[in-house]
Image (cartoon, rainbow, N blue to C red; front, side):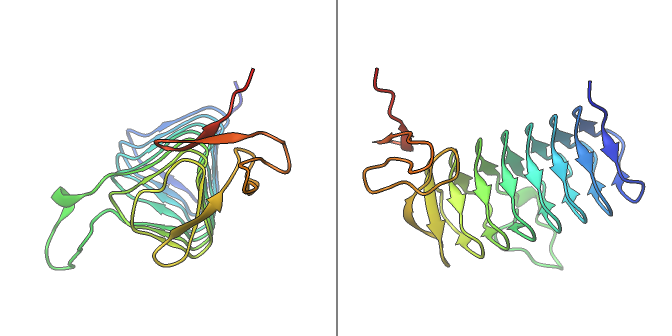
Amino acid sequence: MPEIFIHESAFVDEGVSIGSGTRIWHFCHILSGSHIGDDCRIGQNVMIGPDVTIGKGCKIQNNVSVYKGVTLEDYVFCGPSMVFTNIYNPRAEISKMDQVRPTLVKHGATLGANCTIICGVTIGRYALVGAGSVVTNDVVDHALVVGNPAKPIGWVCECGERLTDALKCPACTKTFKESETGLTPDRIT
């Protein structure tokens, strides 16, 4: 089993589960009740938790806070300094932790640098949120969204390349078809 690496400047609270092969870098804080899967890369100055679930193979770049209520499925990429929220209308003088809105980021999704994910949304499988975008609504599978508020402008392949108008990947040549949840691979036999 590959070893877990935790930099000496990181803090990991009691009651945290960390999968094999995971690397946690400088100045991170992993709060109690959080679960991090196998082979994750947690960049510098990342805060996770409490009670957050992160799937296997996730990459969380520098300066990201993954707050209570956020779930990352397997192989999610969180770009540098992107932002999650967990309370829709916070106030400093009023505790609202009983109002946490869950956010789900599905398998293989990419969240670009400096984007903001407003709590209570679901980001679909292999979706790509452009850098600096503000996501206020659910994003369907394979959608490419940009702007404030984020709007769909196209589709992306599982390999991350933008699809042609014919829903074909120019890099790996995989083709797709529309479905109720966005796009699915077109499995022609």
